[in-house]
Amino acid sequence: MNNMHKGEECHLVLEGKIMAEQGEDSFIVEAGDSFSWNASVPHFAKNVTDEKAVVLISVYSDTELNDVL
Image (cartoon, rainbow, N blue to C red; front, side, top):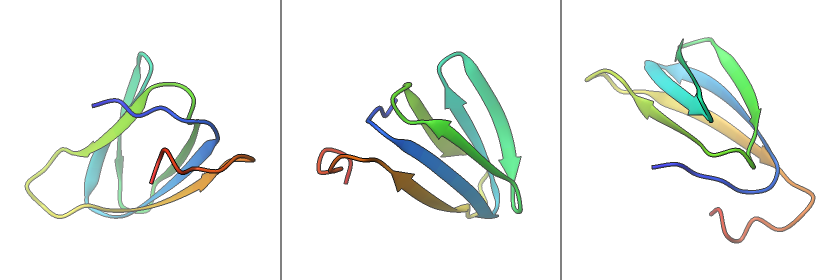
């Protein structure tokens, strides 16, 4: 399921491994990796293993994010 909203997102993978996809690009990131993207482009991230994945996500927008949370 794709997500899309105004602002920027920064992600830090604390545990596990996830697949992140934005637009036509996808990539695998593991514990210790970080990435950011323009949140107005359709995106999603999902756990790609049976192990627990923990990701810290910071969202910045100059508008209210009532439609995100």
